[in-house]
Image (cartoon, rainbow, N blue to C red):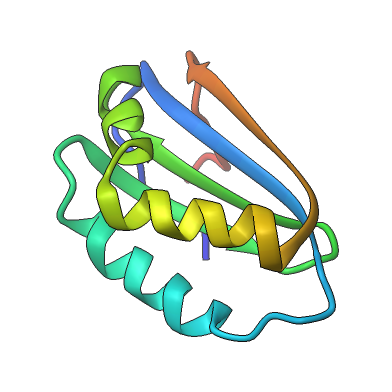
Length: 105
């Protein structure tokens, strides 16, 4: 599903990852992160695509809001597990969305 976002500008955090073989505990943690992020100040929406590579894009009212989520305690634990257990490789890209459009009608 395509996320509904407000008029730009806003911040997009693009997480691209190649999963590892052992994903024990991943699904439970991912669901918990979705619960937590929904209550974060400045959170706008999220959309993802399974791969590989897996791609998740979260949208934020500002870069400061995105940084605050990166530093949230439970999210820090999930990030560590991702680095150590769930992903063979990953990239995080942060961008400012200037334009947002779709089909007319």
